[in-house]
Length: 472
Image (cartoon, rainbow, N blue to C red; front, side, top):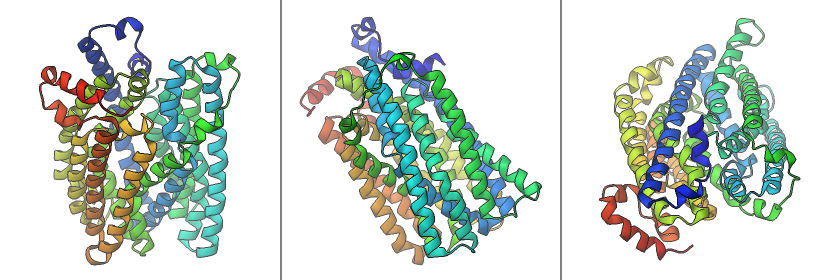
């Protein structure tokens, strides 16, 4: 996995002093190699997730599947909040500590992020369970699913934080495997086993039990990866704590993660809250299929994020602009390869889930078109979160998530599932436009695709001039 390590580690001094074009080609090669590996994991994970969803829907029925995805939406939302933003900040802080050889603070950060996440996750689960009992009681299928599924919150939160630590230490590809492949595979295996053995009755509560078990197994695997990836210097360093530096971005990053999950789960939450649990399940499947078009962009972002932090710490802003341009072009080209066949095959793929699921095909088309627009913008959000502009990133995403939720509420009665899909697609487009605007104003970085479409040789001087005028 040598290409994983090169994506996150600083380049040697001899390479940094080399010709700028040679350095840029090296950065692009690292990005392409790590992105390719990440894309393979995302594709395999998407296939496993799709098959797991099909199996779950078939095993517990369409209505119970809708109840399960509704509970899962709330669980995921609270789990991301329980990370306290470390799911993102570790990607920026750990590479910076490594570059500065500040191993005491690196060890303190790893320890504090794990214990803080575990504590906040348990608190969120306890509050959630108490709220569910107060509102729903304990006898309905939905109530029982909440009572079981919400205890996955601390486990999911820890999985996110541990996987981020693995990525920060160079495991760009391997960090994705537990959460994107292993968790769903284990969950559906557990579900099939308990149902076949008659240990539980088919329904959403059984799926929730499988979720908890699968997530725990993925967390154990992720911890094993972390032990192998962590630098040996951490073992001898005495932990030092910089709580002010670590907690300062907590609020904006937590808001960012909540808004990010709300962007993807708003449709399920709105439909489930309106009592349309079956439609919530259909929308969840349609959104998951459309999300396949985002896999290339997500893979590129996995390798792009730690590289952004490294270049920003070194003040290499011109090269960051040019790398962003290459990332945007690569993102759009690879997304097109996925989007076209996905639109053509939407109805047959949805039909595998059972009767009525094919009604989500128009939603898939709308959501895929929005993903194409996002791919053209590139992984721009990391230009903010990895350069100390977490508040701006959180505000733009929170605004888009709010618009998404409000529009979904307004359109659900008149247009049903398709209206919720329109709200989701429109908010995704608006968010990406906002990110591009903020990156230009805060960092002086132009939209990546606009730069990529020009001749880079003639444009390099203009980029350097504009970036040099930007605010640090």
